[in-house]
Length: 139
Image 1 (cartoon, rainbow, N blue to C red):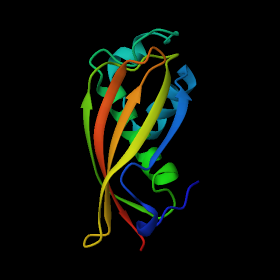
Image 2: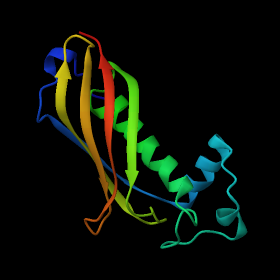
Image 3: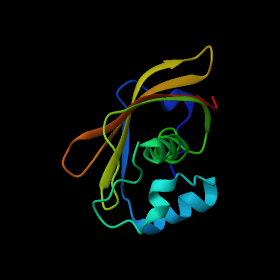
Image 4: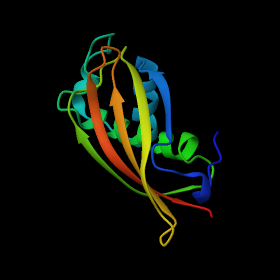
């Protein structure tokens, strides 16, 4: 876990992590969130299957990965998540290896907040989600 403070957050600072989506992760996500969208329940998901028909579950996954980016990597321990805005370009599939990357765009001393441009790409280099994270920080 990273420990960036407001003073250490500068435009251009970048952090990223990689995660591979597994059927077990989908099962755990369903258990934790109560997301019982019917498509994933009809049959066991196999590598290459979409996490859901309309991307609703994958959108939740993307937001969760952005929360992990802010709370663990950028800024990390000192983060108080103020907001996450997401745009979903493509579905996330079971078996995808995702790179979740954030870059500090701006820092506001007045609100003790950093704006982070975030993007999730799959193993083919295709952008599946992009967004803006607003993260409050300790000074």
